[in-house]
Image (cartoon, rainbow, N blue to C red; front, side):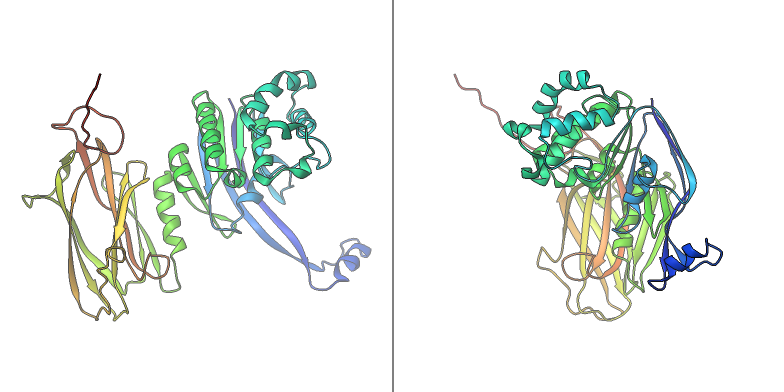
Length: 406
């Protein structure tokens, strides 16, 4: 079982004002500093328990890849420390360590040796590595003729040929095709079930929320938030839509979940209700029950257009269904200051048993990334139960008919 402990980790690079600054500093044996420090990571502390899965997210340049390099030791930290226990397999930069003039087989054996696997073990493992990578006769061709996807296939197959105690994965998997990504994540899930500790960087919201127990959001080289993946991803999405006049708030709900509300405030959500057709609040609903979602809004400043969107999410925060009035061709344009609008949405809860939430957004044009007036996660939380349908599995109810012909 592997564990990771990161304490007060920081990384800074020296920046010199002129081209002679470095030489002058060197000749003076550092007596006079000619540089200033540019911190890319600062005061990073967290731990990953044995068997736990943690995802790291953040915008490009937030320091995610640098953090993984510091943890794996490929880059030296300026301050702080990292302690790890167990055998580590890291998949960072694509094909790192592969020699372009050597064949895939030769590179695989050398990469395995770097992971502490003997040559004889690698020879025994090669049939399984070839089978998983599925690059065919290219295994005996020079790596220089490989596509980026083929390099990723081989690198991942070698790194996971033997289940590691700790698996560290950067965005390398994102270059693969959909088929191999599914195949890779299936192997990662299997490793997790067997006790492997996982630390991964990904922009894939579904991957983070389905695989990880916890998520860490990096922003400007520091930890902006740490917690359940759904709450961290909601906050991250709010940051992506953030503008100079946008505020982001986190509210602790009575059920223990963290609600994220963000927006410029030019339009706001006054209240949201999920109702049975009888008009009563719908906290618990039946599979395939007809429901009514009402959203009352107010326009605080005149805006060119007002779009309302809603998204149904499962208990892990993964989207089940979403749409908005832009797609439904019912945009309010223009929207005058002081206007109050009631949106009434009828839909059928063709959902599987479980807990769900609804996020509501007020924005301009197609999505909230253009102009976010208000985004409210966990606006409604409800449970679905199976009352009168035949037993089924999954997050969706699909009415079917079956005939058996002989």
